[in-house]
Length: 114
Length: 113
Image (tube, rainbow over all chains, first blue to last red; front, side):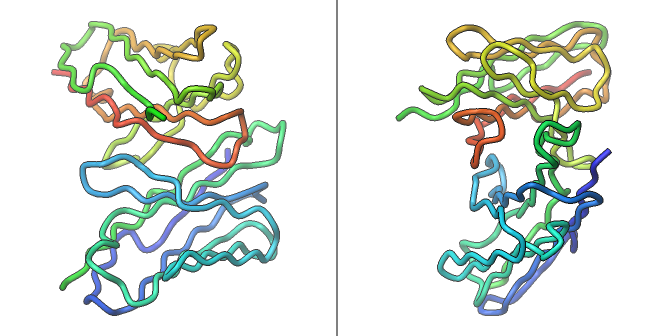
């Protein structure tokens, strides 16, 4: 079945440093979503990417979807302590196929040292 | 608009028992998905319901089942509980199946002893 790999598993940075997490799917995706889960909280939707090569920005966050629609990345510029949490990517396979469900990566836990 | 609610929030059961968890989606949302979250396996998809029909199913044994009611509220049931079923069970609602974003509830923390 569809697998979504995410690296790194953990990332510790000093406040002000940049952070990037990468996501790779074993199959071509129809779209990819990103979620953030604060410690003790539940996942919160950040964004969805649909088009090949798409790039979207949300303030200090930049999301990219690969040309082949099998990989994605989230980059945070100048991290702040409020960025702490686990960032998950979630890929959805082709419509109507057995992989149409949302498959989550295992997430990257970001900690920020003030 | 009220968010996704899940009940109960915490539950302790013993091996062999069964459990039913409930999820009320955001008003107007017709799709409900269930996930199991554990430190080792992360977020794993259980099933998705839309208009009272199961649309997708993850790779979990038949002990895990669910249903959706006409008001879009959903329940999931786990029978013959095992220690490995201890996890945070998250419900997420969206407008329709395959929709852009899913809105997660706070989860039910199930501990099996």
